Length: 366
Image (cartoon, rainbow, N blue to C red; front, side, top):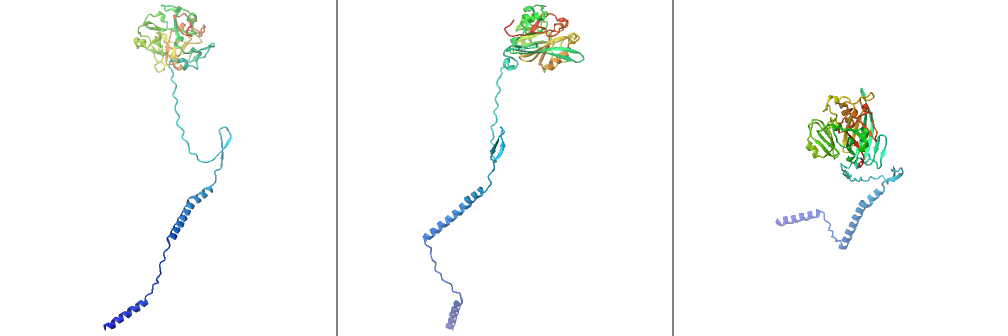
C-alpha cells in the first residue's frame, strides 16, 4: 500500500514537471576591457560636443544676428554734425568743485579796495577829480517838497587818511580867528573844502585836529570822532568816555553837532540842539560810509530858489545817501563848499569868514 502510494506520488510529480514551461538557458558573454574603454571615450566626446554647441556656437550665432546700431548725427558746439554711436555710456561723476579761498584784503589798503575809483594820473573836470590817492565827484541835488532846496554832495574816496585834514584860519588855532573860504582853501592846499564847526570860539569840550589834542573835556554836546583807522563815529552828549576815545587814537574830532543818524544808519527823530538851529537853514555836514569813503554836504538856504533844510530833513537826506554816520557842522552864512579854488554853492548873504575847514588834498602839499 505504501509502495503503491509512493509510486503514485512520483508519477504525479513527473506529470507536473512536464506541465511547467521550460526556461531557456543563455550563456553570458563578457565584453573585453579595451572595448569598454573605447566606449567611455566616445561617450565623453559626445557630451563635450553637445556642451560646446549649446554654450558657444548657438549664442554666438544669435548675437551675430542682432541689428548693428546706426550712427546718429548730433549737433556739436561749433555747429558741425558729428557721428556718434547710440550706445548708452555710463555717466562719469565729476569731482565736486573746490572752492577757491578769497584773497585776504588789508582793511587799511584803501588803494586796492577802491582801485576802480582811483586813476594812475590826475584827471579833473569842473565837478570831479581823480588821482592815485583821491576820487571826488560833486553832484547838485534838488530836493522838492513844499519848498525847493539845493544840495551839493561831494562823494569822496581816499587811499591815505592823510588826504583828509583840517585847517585853522591863518594856519594856527586862535580864539576867534577868521579867514575867507577861498583864503582857507588856498593856504591849506585844499582841493575840496567845507567850513568847520566854529570850534575857534569854544575853549572847552573834546577837540582833536590832525592828531593833536586841544581839549579833553566831556560836555553835553554831541561830538563826532574820526579815528586813524578811518572809522567815524558820533556820540550823544554826555554819553561818551574821553579816555576810551583817546585809547582808540582819534585823528579828528568836531563838537558843534548834532549827530544826525542812529547806529543803524536811520535818521534820528530828535536832536541835541536848539530849536533855532533845528529850523530850516543853510547846512554844512559830514557823512561816513566806511573807512576811506566819506562825503561833504552843503545846502543852500534863506534864498528864494533854495529854502534850506530842517535838521530832520538833513538827517533824512543822509539816510537816503546810505551813510552809516553823519554830523552837522556850523551852518547859515558859514555853509560854503569850495573846489579847485572856487566856491561851488551859493552861500547865504555871500558867505562869511570861518575859523576852520575840513579839506581833501593830495599828501605832501600845503
